[in-house]
Image (cartoon, rainbow, N blue to C red):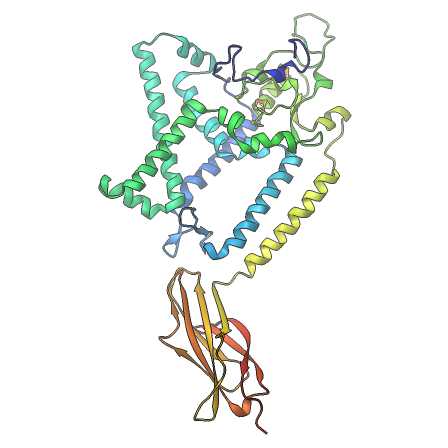
Length: 465
Ligand code: SF4
Ligand code: SF4
């Protein structure tokens, strides 16, 4: 598109110069109410990220996401391969939630909660401001020749970046393998855990590279969620938007001039603070991570020129065009219904999830046997899955029927997170049989606690006349 066309900005990326090279972004340090709120939320999120791996319940991690061994602990409850259906459903719910959330609230997640934004804008960018000064000083330092002073500043920055990346890398590993195993890797001789050490260094190097060099490109070029915005957002989605009806025609503020322009004084502060290098006045763009920096910048300007805040604000394109608020569209309603249904199903499945799963099936190919004491016996296969962290001693007995259950082999004690398969013999007096197939109920207990009851059938020669 030719320069000057209203949509010509779509031909360019803020992070790429006219020669196709990298254009380093040095955003002005943001300040304002949204920045303060995001800072507070980031502190909470960082405390959770770094603190949760240290939390334990009965000696086990409170949260563990061991994707390698398919071993997960969520809120102190162990989940394993046997809970695959729950993971699938949770994953689907998460995807639907993200879609619905994005349709309604745009990239709110990116600006407030995404770890990339939290670390980039709230941790590493602050280090830049602290060591190298505000945006102009950073740019000057980059373009200046190497001097001892520049080497010290750059060196301090690289060191701090690596130290924090190392912390993030270790924390990421702690979420996967648990803090105890991480502690072992850290305290044992280096050669004892080559795999763990390699993972630790790989994580640290990856995070260092992302934050020192890749930076905002992660959101603009790589993030799949960012890529999806083009299909998910519509004119009713809440995004960070410039009120062009109020702002245009923009024009510089000049002393003693009778102002015939809109409220935008074309100060470009909203562009200066943008960490992805865009001008939000051009409209919603894929690069916008909803960081709110431009809202704060413009609100400050509006206060100075005695205009109402909110020239840039959270609003939908439709809302700005019509001057109306949020509307429930058919798409939003249908997504909400699907999401609520999925959440209800997921909650029911979680509430009904047992810690010990037991199946009792009559052994295929085996018929009944008549015993010398007048009783009839059937052989059953029992499979018991213990999902808990402690060994479980399980007992089986008949409910409301005469008879006895004998375990063939050792008592049914199942190791933590283990499976036990055994054969059992059920013996019933012939007189108690109601036909060739008599229904039976087996109670499964762990100590005094009844786990479940299982219905099965018992084969016999028929009722004795
Ligand atoms: S900060 Fe506000 S007034 Fe200044 S250029 Fe941006 S929109 Fe216009
Ligand atoms: S346009 Fe505004 S909200 Fe979007 S990334 Fe830039 S500063 Fe942040």
